[in-house]
Amino acid sequence: MDLLLHRQYFKEGTNSALFVNGHFICFMIELPWLKNKRQVSCIPEGIYELKPRFSNRFKDHLQVVGVYQRTLILIHPANDALKELEGCLAPVSQLSGIGKGWSSRLAMQKLLSLCHQAIERKEDISLIIKGPSLTLPKGEGM
Image 1 (cartoon, helix red, strand yellow):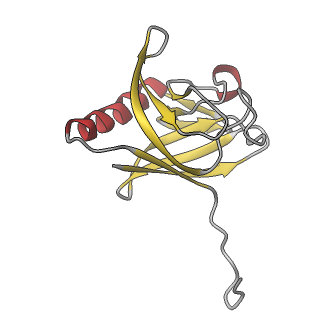
Image 2 (spheres, helix red, strand yellow):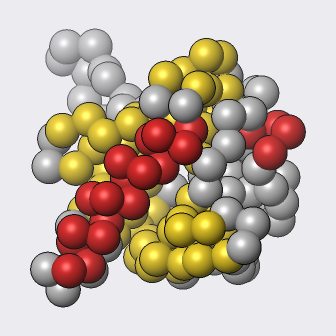
């Protein structure tokens, strides 16, 4: 199963929308892009494997595997990226600002349900992270 994350970057944080097969799943919040610095930056755009994970702190959540020079990048509930994230990603049901949202636990449950169904079907789960598309004026090619 491929999850597609479309990002928008801002100085204060990163807001994204998550899709599977063209269907909107939830929004995601992250820290701003600070050149992939540990614990203060969102992760680079790219394709990553997702694995289920459990901890006492976050209970059921997901781990993003294969991030360049980073380890233990998680997808877990949070409603304020600057206050609650250290380089991780958080699903939210609704955006309320840059790097902020509401009902993260509800969005997390929706995402986990989709991922557990894929795991039961023996599918790998990929997270494809893309930035804003460059739209050129008509007639201006690259």
